[in-house]
Image 1 (cartoon, helix red, strand yellow):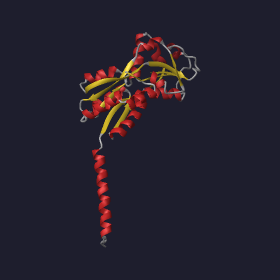
Image 2 (image 1 turned 180 degrees about the vertical axis):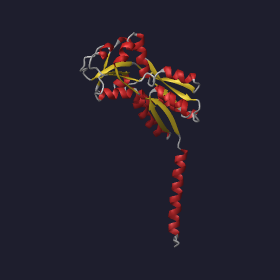
Image 3 (image 1 turned 90 degrees about the horizontal axis):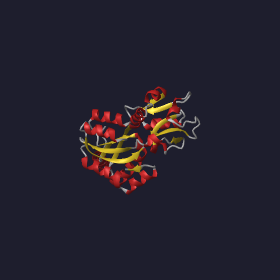
Image 4 (image 1 turned 45 degrees about the vertical axis):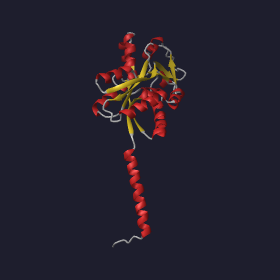
Length: 256
């Protein structure tokens, strides 16, 4: 049975089709930047990405993980626009692999020994993590920048061989270590100072030799990005825009 359309019905159908086509075209034309982002800067990047979208209409797709894991994923996928590593060593690796067009330092970060709030296990030195009953967690040295730095600190202080035997668990990212302390599944760990400052359930233990290992997160444009200009614009927004700077300051990050 054939349906008969009145003139009014035809107009309504055509109008609906028109707006449907506009909606599809807008989605197709909407620009998106894919950013591989170290977990340490997740809180600030989430907020800045929202501000950038409000100002430009460009969506920022944030893929989080440990710096080493992200770099491995980038080399396999061979796609994306920006790589944000938690320390310079991983960016140097990326440059050596010839996948970075240009890079800029973003924020300064320092590793710290952390414990549950009020330090119930009375941990005051790195050697205390080997006391009976202490659950000590670190980020995987092969996957996350803070894990790499943790291993380096302990090796250069002559403590790695002893402390690695006391490691209760290794985790993928700095955020995982912080959350484990928050949830009381471990008693101590090593994370970045800015991460520690974001948790009221965590206290940082001041250790002089840890302060010598200050790092800086670095952002770089990937060579195969098809949106080099937009990637650079987002980088400049991160570094120079007043709204971006206020977000960094609010969340306790020290811009480089």
